[in-house]
Length: 428
Image (cartoon, rainbow, N blue to C red; front, side):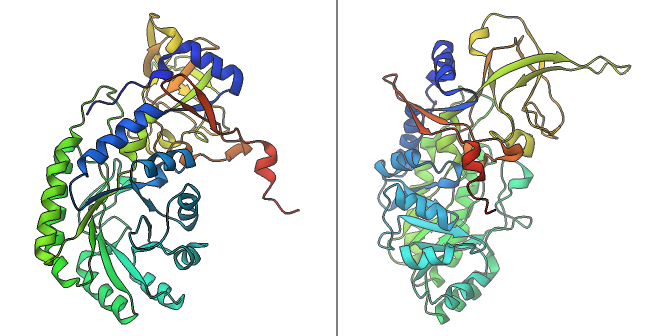
């Protein structure tokens, strides 16, 4: 599929109006882009016995969850509070069916209480979690997250499978964990693995097929099994806005996997997938204002940089500072200007507060229309792990999130945080 253009992000008049009303920086969600991505996933899972989930850690806002729920997409949560946010957005608890799955390697804070009180399906990612559930008095069904021995993320820090990944029970230990669960009165009703969103599409296609084949080897030993999850992993192209992602090809993988796993189990099994990034990444952009343009003097090595200083920082979008991740940058009102290499840097008291970095996290000047003080700048494809990973470093309040509909209406789905919000948790 080709993702529709992010219409509000290309409209300099609209962006100026929103900046005047809400201030900068701000996030702008395009409802049509989000719905197009949801529709693309749902169309690959509309075969009998195939179900899509949303890994809500990518963006857990209530408005996003409501869109998922309306489309029939279930939820993969990774904390007790994420479960409660899904319930707040209208998702049902309970195991029949398990519309909310709680995936974790550690039960922290209220996670065990939520499992007991909300009836969600716990997806166990570490052997000791079975004992944690038993100690809490839980005797219901569980899912088992397996590390299949392969898989990776978009960067090494995000490995989701293989020897360097912390996630899941190593595949050869799956049987012993099942036995421990059964001895504690729990039934393993789902097997789960996640091979990551780093692979290019052809590699993803091959890895999903391989994952289904490896699950087929162990499925017959899980007599209470109702479903198998192949995880997420559908990639998003951050560099090419016009990339054609052949997501429809995954339908044949999912159909074949569902049939094969059902056959080896001797009964119908549900096949699940749970992307997060693919749904959300292109649907939101971060809009920021250039406050100044300054140069450093060229030294004997010929080193010198033009900095476009902006009022957004890694408190708003941390991926470039954390991973050296690439996000497209545009200046909607600067079309037609000559371009020049520019480093885009934020307001934080931190040298790493730079949006233009390479894969080694070194400064990587970007060819952009020559920036001018006062220009609005757009950082694209921040819907996944953008606002969701925002922080209050330097006591900065999180930027508002705005929601744009195709009819031109714009509403705020979260407001800008204030100092009162930030200090409300302090007990003096």
